[in-house]
Length: 169
Image (cartoon, rainbow, N blue to C red; front, side, top):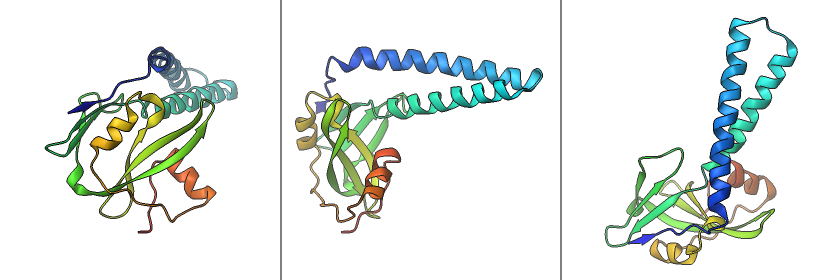
């Protein structure tokens, strides 16, 4: 069994994001309360939209931060994240391959691994930016690498923001 190891620099960053998520959730809840029970004005509405947008952005960032276990003999992958605190089990036998993508961010160039299901869609993402043993995780997922033939900026953005894209075999 292979367990993911987080890079130490991302643990305080993760904790900060969780605290910010809670703060923006409380701010959003207070704004929604004031919209419903108090006099509605445009400023309150705009502030509520701002809190909602920031909350969704932070949640989107935190969903990439996963604790992963790869069981090589049973070909199962289990990950725990803020959206799946009790874990999500994936049977790797239900996937046809993996696709490696190079992504660019403020911290530099990183490799991400996407699982490809039997309908040739990307179904799960492991972001190499957060793990010190990312190569070991990739080796533990014993699936064939699929080359992406859907090149282009729009498809790159689909992968980056939604994590879902149809792959041409």
